[in-house]
Length: 118
Image (tube, rainbow, N blue to C red; front, side, top):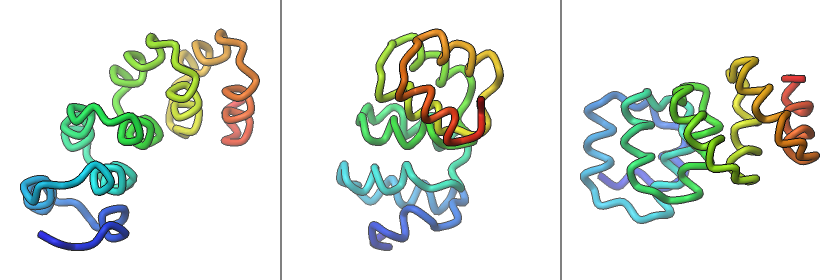
């Protein structure tokens, strides 16, 4: 299925379409574009995390459908870039915000402020 990189970021993803896209032997760059799609479901997000591509993980952590379990897993890595990505997720809970604030990192705090989370 060749729909183009830009389309991967916005196409409405039914499970059937997602499976067709995944089965088309995506490059890392195509996975990155796909991971930025706001229409990803929880199971699609979980599948994309299995690809273990840093840029994909960053996009997924920003996705409003990313599970709290995944977000907590990445917070526990104490990785500044992942923490900034999480701070850009507008649906994180107050306890996740508190964990991010505990790192006392100016860039993470700036991201939280930018998104009106603190």
